[in-house]
Length: 117
Image 1 (spheres, rainbow, N blue to C red):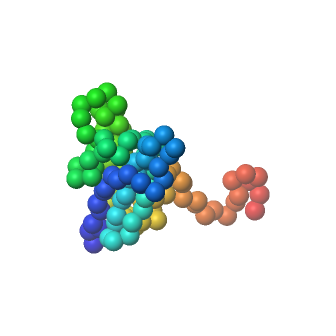
Image 2: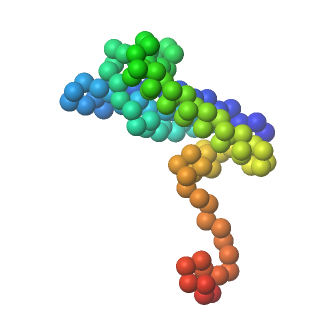
């Protein structure tokens, strides 16, 4: 079964800082389940284009942030591709763990830390 995945970049006006900038977030939706991640970047609301999900203009700041957003988009699609190539279903939980770098705990008889049962 193919999973529908969509990506949206948006600003969170409710979390505006004192200097007037707002954080940019990435929303990944897999089969109707939303997950929001901070991109770690901020912008002024007037410089943000909601229609394109990008910063407006060709300034150094806009190009830098738009490049960062594009790299995050590529990361999302590469994670999806890896999961599909390994015949794993792309679920929100599995995707989130891969995106955040959380490794699955493998169950074994012996404990890793001590080597004892």
